[in-house]
Image (cartoon, rainbow, N blue to C red; front, side, top):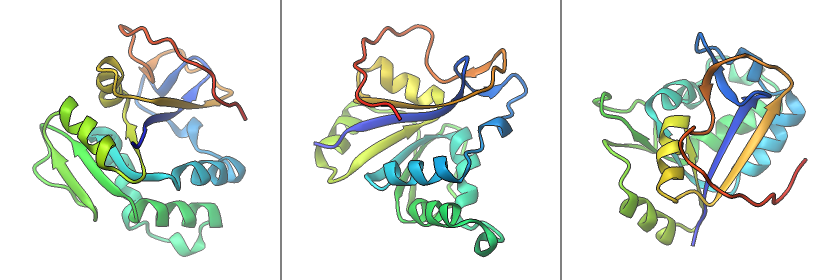
Length: 171
């Protein structure tokens, strides 16, 4: 059975975006990007909330990609070759290849996806991931900490869920 993995790039104080919704402080350097790419290779399907999908959709057809560093080009290829499911009640359609739209996070459908998948699934967007964490669907969490304190914004973990975790690795 495949795992459902939630990974986020966060500030030291636990936010994926600051109070203004900005996350320019989270752009990974080349070494971190290569490390992320290695982790992403095991993913067969991305599950995204609407806001994260809208940000990530830029990877589908990025202008000037040929001039970007190799790690960025490599991630763009990983993105394009991975299936995507977007959970949104407001989108009427998706704009990227290999993407389907769902209205609600269905616990049983996620369990079935995990059961049927040959490769792991990744869930992204703190709201959607928070629902999955609360439902006990997430098997693994990963965090890339940035040495910045933003003082508030969008937290990467839900405030109302207790989950006892085991440290698997650190790098």
